[in-house]
Image (cartoon, rainbow, N blue to C red; front, side):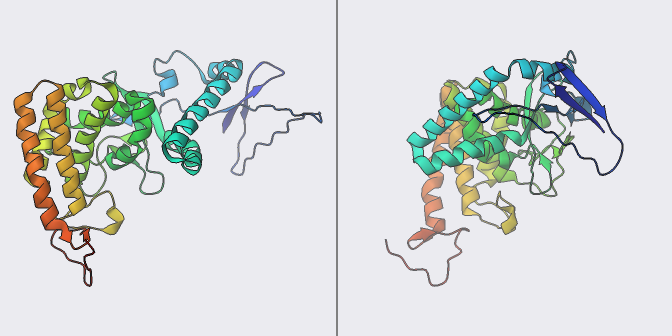
Length: 334
């Protein structure tokens, strides 16, 4: 095992090589003061190759051009420490105040701690095509990389503060389809098992779930940026996925959704809603791109689906999880 430890006295990183199975690193910081004081310890992990992307090994973003070393990064981190901490504190304050305004103190505290977890579940690399890839890992299930139904719920953070990272969560899924490696008319579930992004490994597709997610997110990016340039770049693929939603999304066949722990469910009313939202999102993008005839066609399709959905999902004072599957004993209070 090799550890890089920054030695302040030596003003340079020190590499410590040890062999064994039960290794520990112990560090004591002597502050020697009764007043408020602080110190720091810098540890670095040099991943060298970060991600394998369709058979090609990619370096981490900080060394994507292979022109630096982990030792140099330690020295830079030490030199920039005060400025970096100031930026971190400013980000904390911004997110806290935004969340406080939106949902109160408890919500702000949750956002302040959860945004770190959300960000740390990703790896930043550059694709061979020169695109940013912001790849997630499923930490508490099967370790899938770039799972679309994880991209979807984490999207608000990145849509608000850095839409380019949201694109980085979608670029690989678009490439998977547009390269011909994924040949199905709906979006893939994932790109592999972290850190190997060589193609979907999940045992089953989630056609309506993932296609709806991708189209809706493309529209959300357009809203965040005030233009549909990103959607225009992937218009052919978005059209294929939306046409799938039109054909098979309203009354879905037996398939999984993001709540896959609940098992398979046919005629899933939540998936149907996602399909409707996806179709309307595509219509919105068409309008932003000046494709009025396309907008009218798909907007009318989405609008026509809504009353049908309400009729099939109605069950007194609530809607059912599956179309025309009434819950015993339910009564209306409407």
